[in-house]
Length: 92
Image (tube, rainbow, N blue to C red; front, side, top):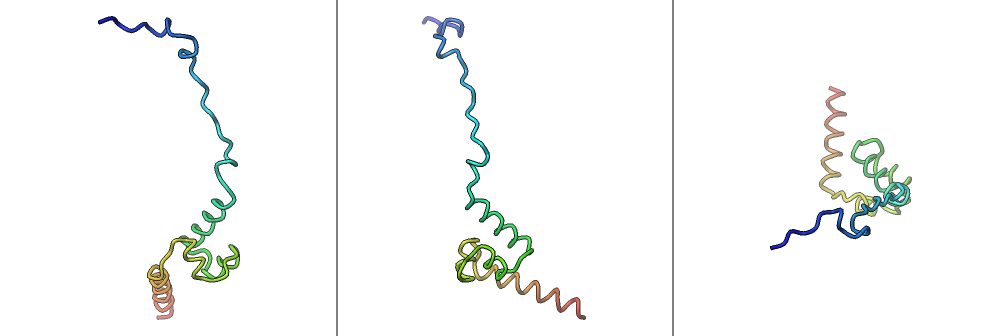
């Protein structure tokens, strides 16, 4: 069996390494991506309430916001329970 020719014998089109394509960051991140990331981070860090987030993101209902954030009612209930326990603990 014959060995394949080394790289110096390959056609120039094959030897040339193409430059990587660099996509500008602003083309990778859309306004929707930024908006949803903001809303999700503010919700998870408990910086803003659902009502405040709803107002900022323009959702007409809390249910629409929670769908947007991919949050279910159980998570909302757990978060509210934790806040209530903390408030009651501080009063005691």
